[in-house]
Length: 319
Image (cartoon, rainbow, N blue to C red; front, side, top):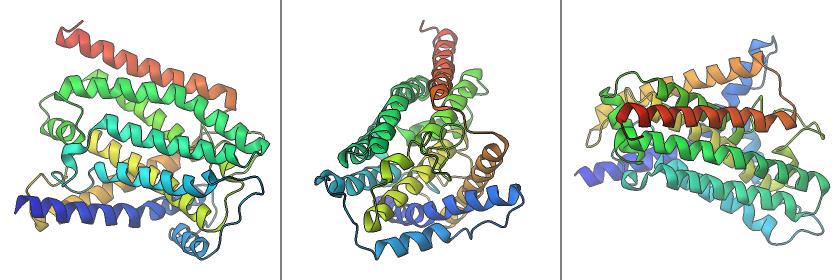
């Protein structure tokens, strides 16, 4: 019965992530527009755009190879699998034993490589420039994630996301300054991974400063729809990841029933809405930084992660 409930919750989780990812992007855009006094697009507009693009045949660049055809499917598949491992409204899903933070980070890295290859494949200057900048950011972002995983593993006794969320929800660790540093570091990585302000601006197409958009200039039709869905799913994944680690309250425990699932779903929607509001307010109040300042931004995140790790080792007597 428990395995059947885990399978049902896993299927519902996958459907929930796919359905809400574009809506989450639309909500953030609508909130940002309202904060600056504009009416803004409808929150369901990303879904409408995706469905419209799915009906169109992609047009490939003259010098494009099969990489341009495979890359969007590979990136979306890796991101979808990573999203399947991050719990939303319930724990104890079928894939929970495999929800290792290192595996999730590896799948996100695979999606990033596919995006960078897509930018290089067409042979355009902007695509190569955007891919080079994306991989440069990854050099700083991935070590931050690895150090934070080490901090969580020391505190929770493992890197499994379900186990970490359970330990943090029970409150046995208390308040730790190292967790605050790790949270700030992961927030910075989340902004960089999703091409958000101040690292990048997904709403503009400035040729000299764009990163993510530069790698998708040659994408069109169905391929562009897949890339847009992948970006939306990655944003929802990071929101769910931050909620599972730092806001685990209200999530239905393993082997629970539909009633607790419904309560967990309400709590999850509230947490995702809170993070969406925070992101909209943050991006409306801050300007995009210059590209050469991004390594400094992510370097500060790495410093925070290293401080978190140092404090953990000192407090546990492992140093």
